[in-house]
Image (cartoon, rainbow over the protein chains, first blue to last red):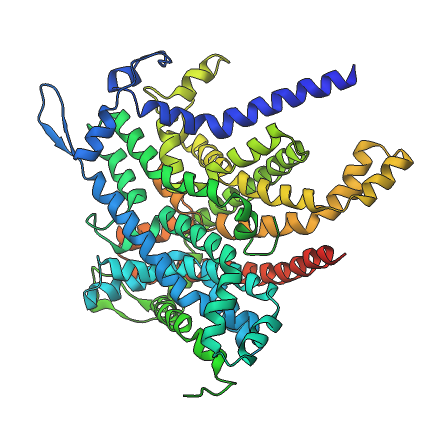
Length: 284
Length: 296
């Protein structure tokens, strides 16, 4: 009998977990195919004619409301901005971070640990502390509202992330392989490029995807340092929901489009996620 | 061209260091601002006032309210996420298709931007059409006030935080559980040790470093949470959900009181810096532990 009670409890636990964690995503996805009338029904509609109208409106940037004027939607630009900012940040991070990660892994040098720690502490510093003065600086030197400035500030989160993950991968590569290659008369750079990087490639790839997700998901930097012209989807979606008269289905559609890229990427790096999230402390 | 061997690692880290310096400058500027009377609306009043801003915020009841709300938020999110994350990890520990699939799917909320997660929940708990309200009406919970009432707003925010970040704890603890050595469990099995004893005396102690690491991570993020709260309640109604960063944000952009906002952020930074130190020590310990176990 006791086994039965346990399995019943377990069954309910599974149902509760799925309901709480997955139902919200599923329902917003569902809402994105609804018209406003269907959403505003007293009893939520489970059976309805799904429409792609919201997606079309989002893409074309305008929505004709019957008996009303045409509404212009800015969201596509937010998506483009998100892509520019995320790809830009990850590229810069790779350029700056991989050599530094290698140095931290291979060489014991004076101040090395301190530098590594300082970089990590940025990841955990209150974002506003740094952005507030930057906001004033950027306005003064005319960098406010530029992709360049934002990508630079994004390094605050992406650089330590990549550095601490990739460092672990370089540490796992035996230096002997590199030495052997260099004894053959190859330069340091050749051994770094042909031996070390290919061996650490899975780690670098996973770390850059995780950096991409973090950059895509960032909210506060662009909220403060950019105008609506360069803001990403996270800020754009908030403006979307607070603006009046935008159909709820369209808001849901905007949210779906904004979260889809990171959800899909997450499935790709599943294997590396634990290691990435714990900055290399826990092997998944 | 030959670069000095000793200098070489510095050359490699130099680009990253430059970014570092670029960030240290605004940091010190913020500390400097915190010692000044600096309000954008009254530029002529600008001047050095030593620690007046700090005295000011610590004698201000609304800052104490901010501290109280921040700590309440942090405490409850971490406790709930830890218990729930541990529970789910234990439930999913055995490898089978259902558990593996759920392990993958449950990570999804964590991959959603916290700000967007707030918006998702805003659509679900909307008083006009929110499906959650509809579902709750079946169990007699009609018209729950969610974020619109001071008594329920913190609950709502904590719920969203739990929704986003429980998967974080879950995935780390699941990895920890699955990496535990088998022998102690087999020995306990042979001795016929009861299930609860096994859990409290073997599983939990061995899992402890993982639990500590995961909670420190969460602690550092939770006490600074901005996205979820700004996107859902902006600190309101009144000041009932006013946490550190939202308060500093409003202080800057609504009251343009840069000096006061900077002082608040420095206080928060000091808390975080301390936690970060504890965190790095723990990180090193855990790394040695997991690497050591791999060697066995």
